[in-house]
Amino acid sequence: MISTAEATIGPFFPPRYVDQGANDLTVFDGRKARGDVIEIRGRVMQEDGTALENLIVEIWQADTQGIYRHPADPRHAQADANFLGWGRAATDAQGSYCFRTIKPGAPEGRLAHINFMVMFSGIMRILKTTMYFEEGSDPVLLSVPSERRKFLIAKNNEFNIRLRGENETPFFDD
Amino acid sequence: MKTTIQPRDERTQPSRIIEGYPQTPLRNPKQPLVKRAPTLSELTGPVEVAKRVKLLGGDIAGHGDKQAIGQLIHLKVRVLDEDGAPVGGAVVEVWQANGAGRYIHPNDDEHAPADVNFYGAARVVTDESGAFQLRTVKPGAYPVPTRDGWWRPPHIHFSLFGKVWLSRLVTQMYFPGEPLNAQDRILNAVPDAAARESLVARYVPPAADPYNALVFEHQIVLRGRAATPEQP
Ligand SMILES: [Fe+2]
Image 1 (cartoon, rainbow over the protein chains, first blue to last red):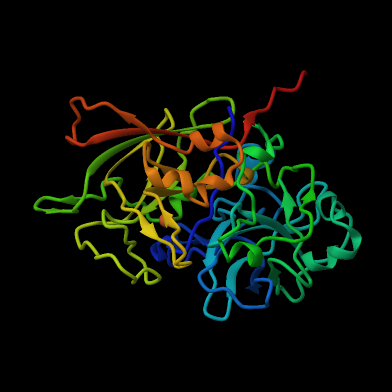
Image 2: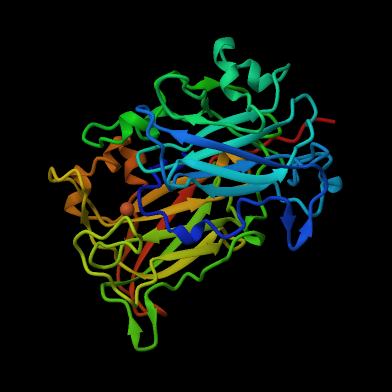
């Protein structure tokens, strides 16, 4: 079967869908996840540099041991029971988002990283990218042209996303 | 359970830049998208989102003597993967305009009246057969602020969480026989006619219905197939 066509999330995504605490991954079901707590912050800007408010950012990541809470991960039974690995945030009037999370461990064959998705009015297909903490050997990072890899490396856990134009964030063709 | 994701036929997906939709040239990448081979990171994903977010029922047309104004409809949706297998346990977020074409959202204060009995949003989980249902009113059409004659046809927005990260989908559903469908810039951004057609719900001729509503059926296909088990 052919997968359904995407469409923009539009300007009217209900604010209530950004549940209170959805950007805090360190607590699940009232219990604290294991590992180092970090805060990831950044701004999301369109081509002319304008900051975008109420843009939706979602993340997906491994736990402190580099394990995904998902049955396809062979180590899934050992995943931290108090860590879901998913979060959602909306940008504020300055175009900034913030997540409180656990620094992910490096999954097998990968550098430690966090998957990002961006959804907004005028974005016709979800934009997917990946944030790294440092450069190194990683198959997804190495698939990015070398001169653009630097835009995927967070600095002091700050990860800015430029949708288009100068210093454009690399997005993946999935 | 392992999932594989194959590249899509570009013609089945909307173009990223749309003429007459002024935000699109500012917010979509200019650089070519980067091809990658999916790894475990993208072929896993949040399958327990329902434990993290607040679910809202699928009945958004009002209760008791406080009923939303508009044509009452009963929408029956099935969520499948690319094998045609049902995707059960998937969180689905739904939002739509009221019968007059107005959203419950601070961005929408323009023209149409609010309806205090209309809920506007649902967040449900699919059952084992991949199905979910909505009792709602048919959304009204609304003019887009471009003010050049572009009206959005009646449509319902969906956001879905599938089995893996790359199955995540945001889409819109349309209604059959609507004259505005033919000129909508978002629906017609999808080049393939069959792919556009699959965004339009199917009207089911009137029959006995528990809600005594007009019935529409729709199908949503999330990306992903079951991976063939590796030989021992
Ligand atoms: Fe809409």
